[in-house]
Amino acid sequence: METNDRDSRHKARMIRKKAVIDEKIEQAKVEKGVLLILTGNGKGKSSSAFGMVARSLGHGMRVGVAQFIKGRSDTGEEAFFREHPLVSWHVLGEGFTWNTQDRQRDTDTAMRGWEIVAGMLQDPAIHLVVLDELTYTFKYGYLDEQMVLDAIANRPPMQHVVITGRGASEALRNAADTVSELMDVKHAWRAGIKAQAGIDL
Ligand code: ATP
Ligand code: MG
Image (cartoon, rainbow, N blue to C red):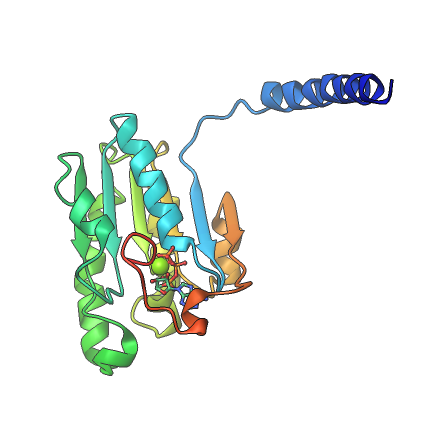
C-alpha cells in the first residue's frame, strides 16, 4: 500500500532526524547569558523582544527594558509590562528622530538614558535586559557604540541582552550570540492599513 509505504518512510526519516537532534542537544552544554540582535526592515523586532520578556517573567526572572527612541506612549506592551513587579521599564527617548529634529537634545536624552542602562548591565539581579531601538542611537551618533559594546561585554555572565533596531552594525553582529534579520516581504501599512492595537502597538 502506498500510504503504508509513506508512513514507514516517514518513521525511518524521523528516527534519523531524532538521532541528529539528540546529538546536537547533547553537544549544547554551555550555560551563559546570550546577546541577541533583532534587526532588519521587517516587522517583528520589538514584538519578538517582548515575547522573550513574557517568557522570562514566566520563569520568575527579573527584566529591565529600556526604550531609546520612543514613538508613542500608548503601546500595549508598556501598559501590560510596566505594572509587573519583576519589570523595570524605562522610556529613554522623546520620540522619533523625525519628530524631535534636534540632535543635541536627543544626544543629551540618550546619555541620561545610558546611565540607567549602564546600571542594569552591572546588576546580576536583572536576568534579561531589552534595549529596544538601540541601533538608532549609534546611527545618529547619540551614543558611542564601543562604549556600549564594552559595557555589554562586561555584564554579569548569566545576564541576557536583547537589542532591537534596523541597521545593526558589523561590530554589533560580531559581538552577538544570536542575530536575526527580519525581512520585509509585505507590510499592511503600505496598503494603507493603520497601525492596529495588539499588532503594531
Ligand atoms: P514590532 O514592534 O511590530 O515588532 P519592529 O520593532 O520590527 O515592529 P519598528 O521599526 O520598531 O519595527 O516598527 C515600529 C512600528 O512600525 C511598529 O508599529 C511596526 O509594526 C511598524 N513596522 C515595522 N516594520 C514595518 C515596515 N516594514 N513597514 C511599515 N511599518 C513597519
Ligand atoms: Mg521596534
